[in-house]
Length: 326
Image (cartoon, rainbow, N blue to C red; front, side, top):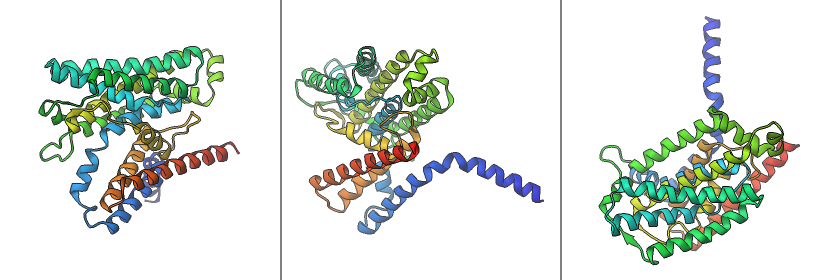
């Protein structure tokens, strides 16, 4: 009897051990929900949950790619602009040329992937910090978006909005379900494949990886291209939610993506990260923004509070890195 009880406890510990790192973030999320539920009578309702679930897909797609980029020791500031240019391509092809979503989407994904791949090729190939390269791509892609759309919003309508609308009886959109599947695939890539382990090794010590005979450059370029592809999917999610391709969409969303990753424990120094935890970071940010809106906080104040959250998250990451070294 005692042995059977011991086996049960061991199995339970084995099941809970991988989940333990997520408990702190989930606790923060629950505390935010409790606070806003007390401050607003309308927050703790199923309608709020549905609203949050259907607003997070675009940021979730970006965070999957950003987590991988940060893990290899890079950073991508162009994700918002690549999202916008992919959305613009979708809008022009579907509205002006009457393409179906299944014809236009591969082109939009290809454009965003090429942008991400160029970020990686220039940064890795010429040894230029990715911060500088992606800052340049941010301007290039945003300018290209305005050229493609003639700086005008392009209305697409029901031909694309179905992807961002909650399904009857399910209460979440296809975009949300696809985003969750992407998070799962990203986590499996990171933890269950040799390429994922290479990413962590590159971010930890790139020189050691090179000395061991592993060619890290192609993998790093591929990671930036994957980040670009995630921007294309985010463009699809945002366009379907708004029914419109907006050339001014997603300005500043790269900061939210970085903040979500850092809140989730991904290191800005590389070598450490978790896609699932980054997704919980997305939920924390979205709950914070939704709750602040419901309690009547002004847009200016929301920007200040969000900025403070980003700074605090970066400080915590810096302290966590220092403690781990000591």
